[in-house]
Length: 232
Length: 232
DNA sequence: TCTTTAGACGAACAACTGTTCGAAACCCTG
DNA sequence: CAGGGTTTCGAACAGTTGTTCGTCTAAAGA
Image 1 (tube, rainbow over the protein chains, first blue to last red):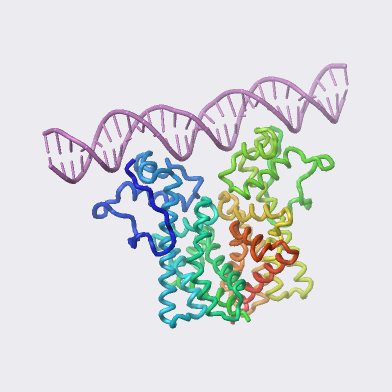
Image 2 (cartoon, helix red, strand yellow):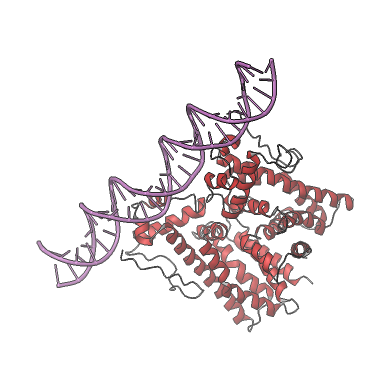
């Protein structure tokens, strides 16, 4: 057992800046990474509890004991996938919010803030990209996740607070409580895009796979949320 | 095995009009009903997969074999809870939409339609009532449910179509596709009110248990959704 | 009164769960 | 080549899962 504990100090900008799992040699994924991607896919599709370690190791074509050797336990594997994807998503959102701040002299309008919140996860839902399973995984984690995961989501207010602060600046006429609720509602638009709807995203109006369909969906969501914020 | 198959033809207005489980004798719940309420509670709190039949029978203080005797299997029990609660919720929504139609000569405004859609499930979230676990169960079923459940939710468009039709009448300037998306977003406001937020609903601003807090939340949600629909 | 039958009960079943262990195979450094 | 550390492998572990079986109780029907 020479495996170091995966330090799970997740806030935002930490977690070394590399996005993808290490590949030991050009294009040849190590066992650890094979397990990671197989587990993420199966968890995202079938749910956390319905997937056994045997399902994962079979999908990854590795030995049964690999999960406990490389990750310590099934739950630790689950948590590592969760922390990595959460950090990636938070980074993408924070980057867009930062750009919006830079473009508007520190006082971005409501629409720009909401766009920074909504665009990253919806972009991941593009059926062409391989990040679809990552966002499916994260959406599942919100309801099926461990108590530990929900604690992370709840205590990681430092991330969402940047957005609520920006919205408070953009909407000075709204109370803090009002901003909280409307931000909460706006997040609901994203989290409700679950699996039944993913098919709809694919099949609606004869194929949603056009290049700009995802951007159109983002625009629709931002429009809807912005109207809710700008309501007199 | 003299148990008849639970006929699961769920659409809307069927399922005999009695709301609560039959009580064999005054106040004395039969084994079947004890299992039903215990299972609903445990499923709502801990999730579907994490609850075993032994957990349920222990909570209900009945024999282990009771579930398979009265319901056929664990999945059949789960499905019966789901169909009953779904029918109840659909009935409540349909009734409010009917009343809105009657009050506005068949052409209710957007706000009335959205209120009929949002108010029933949020009223159930009242921590004082005993329906909180029912709505928690239904929200869980939306993501953790069987394929069979999601099929029911998806194919039961006859229910949601009443609302989309009413919204089309109320918003003649919007295309059918636009109405569909905004209705989808509005539903997201409800389904995102999950468990972490239920606590918030209880503890926010020093206790949300006041009589009119739930109505205030409904008003906030309807306001937000209405703004998204009336957006020019 | 005897017979029938729905239900409750305890015990057991086979299948599957996550995890552990020791040995074998591997790889890189001497 | 020989070394030790790292990884893989097959097998097994103990525990839990949903389900089934035969038996027993008790109330209803004739």
